[in-house]
Length: 350
Image (cartoon, rainbow, N blue to C red; front, side):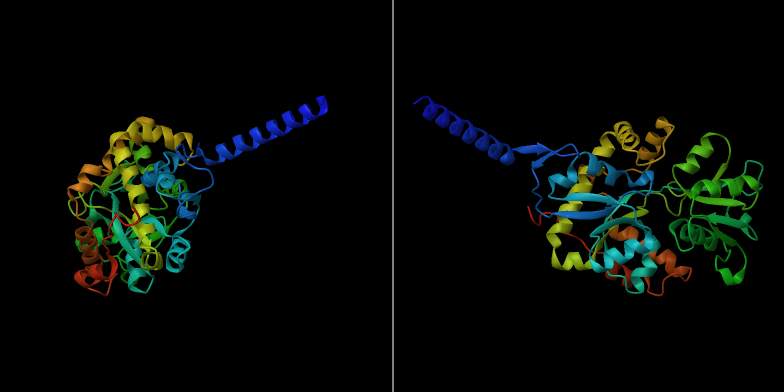
């Protein structure tokens, strides 16, 4: 009799444990990104998003990941490293659904890369710097000078080209009025400036701003304040045309996640920097400066989005026109904008 009771008790205990584990499997669990979602269940599954380039202006990616906004919208996001060409290939074949990027993508789109601009991300984050003892003060002083950039065809190179051409200086290599030298490492570009190997460094934040605050350089151009660029999105969100055509609700969900991140950053710039530092997403030593830069980028709030206070389409048209005027685009601004810009219904999939 005692053996039977022991057996029954053992069976009951086993059933209790089994039911407990099953219940736990149905409960919401906290993810590494800090939000709650059903364990192992994501509406849109796993996706890759380039988010390891160290740029401070990519803050919405870091925040959407760390605060769980991607997970809330149904994505198990894997942040990857990807250069410009890798991003274009991924967008073209749909293996990367969305990336942040500047108007350096425009010529590639004209040449056939299948992507669409679907949102604006933030305002300017590029500065041009000289040595403190330089006599270069404005664009007209750059004739015959050497300009450092991260890559030929990249955004600092294109911005510099527009700035030069508007001042009457040809940026075309064949005209030899200026020389662009590429440096894949921003620190090497700064060293080249200090050593006199280049006359101007065209750079992404935060390196340029750090050098400026330290008194090591003079800033002669700021994308966020220059009259030709101020108040305009310099960085956009590009979606894969393949994903847009086949799974538009997936892109809508991603845009909702990015908007949540933009709004959160606009309300919490200092905490944004804490998260970026803790996650080692960008090399930041001066938290106060980094927070000021984030504020300077003017990430839109949800209210601004709802009020349509900033036209992404108009900014695309403006930069398309500027690139067309200097020969970087064959299409006129109106035609190109119709080709590249697509408004996405954010209610899709809800």
